[in-house]
Length: 89
Image (cartoon, rainbow, N blue to C red; front, top):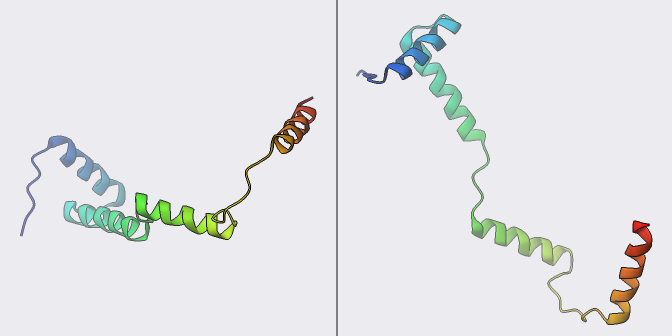
């Protein structure tokens, strides 16, 4: 089996890589593919929207944010605002 590289820039890169490590062209392509495949196999899979929603739900449950709570009162909000106002001074 053979691979025919039609792109001159790709051929130049393979030859440069082969020269760096003293490899044949076949050896260079094989080494490069070994590196890429190893990285991809150990890389974390891309997160999906479903996995992010599930992680958010796990966090909310662990933090107790999934339970109903009383809305903040004006007095509570004013106290928080006053506290932050003092911290900013």
